Length: 349
Image (cartoon, rainbow, N blue to C red; front, side, top):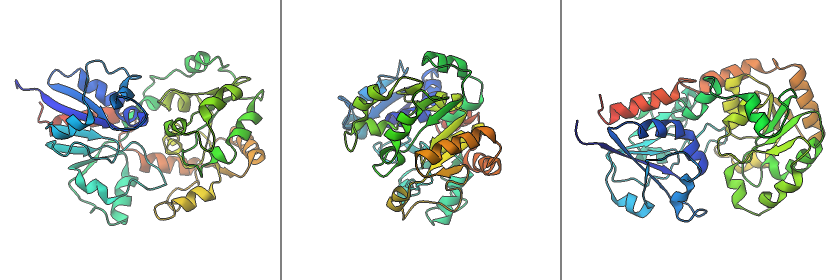
């Protein structure tokens, strides 16, 4: 085959890139493929600067207006936005599985393929009447980002040492979702301050959207005041190294809580009734909800829940195992599954 296949990848946020970074790197080293990347956002100028922090040498950057008018053999997007309407095959890859449920929209009908992360997604699409069980758009892929949690490529000691933290101490990670109704704006600052000088390494991984607003809190200016004495904010886009390093995860309704179940370690959930009220029409509290961990209300309860989790890490193991099984296809091998399916779509040997 002499003609190279043209693949366009769209990202709106850094977490879109993280979700499929491993796949993109594999495509870059395939001499039969030309990889183009584009973005439409309001926080980097030009928009394609969103790719600056990622090692994607060789990918051709394209202005989103130009990209929308050109034809490519394949369009890949972890974001629902469909920029590549003129592409031959359009694939939505998703960028996480969340109980908030916004991804289960009929907007997916504009795509030719849906690279499902796990059985739960297929079931919810069917339950909500968006797609039929045997819809040809469904492809069982998994989540390439999470491969590193399982495949042995991450080094806990090295990661903690790089943040000047003692690997011998228990490590607690706080990773909330981003909306104003989330736990970050209810108890976040108080929780972080309560961890300073405490018995744990305390990591905080904020959603990248949080850094793009100053309301109700400007976290970019707040971080220097809170770090130190065992507290570190993780600014890297990929949450996987921090998840791998943590003995306990604290969250509210972030999709990383589901990813963490692949490690079979204890979770603590902060009660967020205002957030669930915001997603009242789409949230799924019946399937998993916050049942894979202890639910806490307020900082004092959070501390007690952490102690409980460390002393009895097997509690909630059954639900964690269920989420890991229902949430993810091809755990540890999703990158291979995605690259293989892309090769089939592009009719590569």
